[in-house]
Length: 106
Image 1 (tube, rainbow, N blue to C red):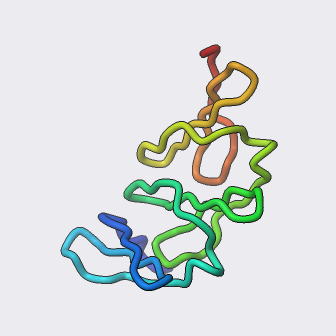
Image 2 (image 1 turned 180 degrees about the horizontal axis):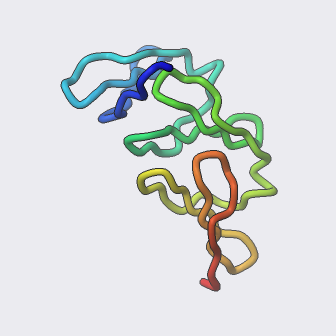
């Protein structure tokens, strides 16, 4: 089983996204045209939006999960393995697989 590498930074240059580890070494890269727009990232995953869908990717741009934007709501924040979305006056916390772990009224 391959060891997961930490995402320390994600940069964009000439139509490509580049993922770097904590030592500044490039882990992987991929074209914006295939990924969409980077919304945010943590040390364990990246969140992209493309064609009204959110996509969760690992450090090698492998899809972890995908879900319609209308189903999840509006992006709020990312921390560690979790992402928060706003929908219908509530904040929904989900893991990087988009499984709900909790919610609260805003």
